[in-house]
Image (cartoon, rainbow, N blue to C red; front, side, top):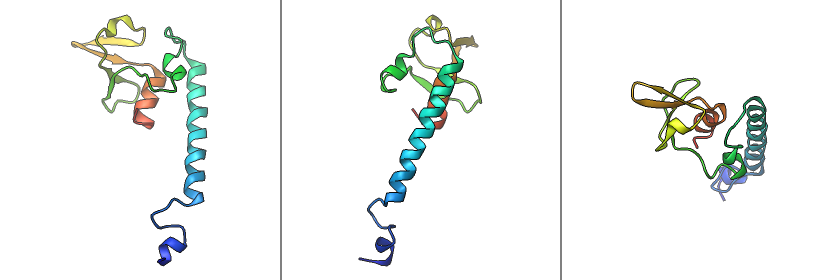
Length: 103
């Protein structure tokens, strides 16, 4: 065992690293709940109901409040905005998921 492994810095995950990840998940869940409390979703938060395994297709454009919508029929979504032959999503939850969680 080298000195890094003995100090919890080797290949295995230390208990501190695992606890930090759990805290981050709790913070993320709290932020998601806050966002959900501020918006009305016509889709009844299907994304959250699926534990975010089912998400609308989107691309981060590095804008603060929008992502590009890549869904086949974006005009059917209440969060879609059309501009110059593109659709943008302004769902605060979808924007958070793609920007902060890379989902």
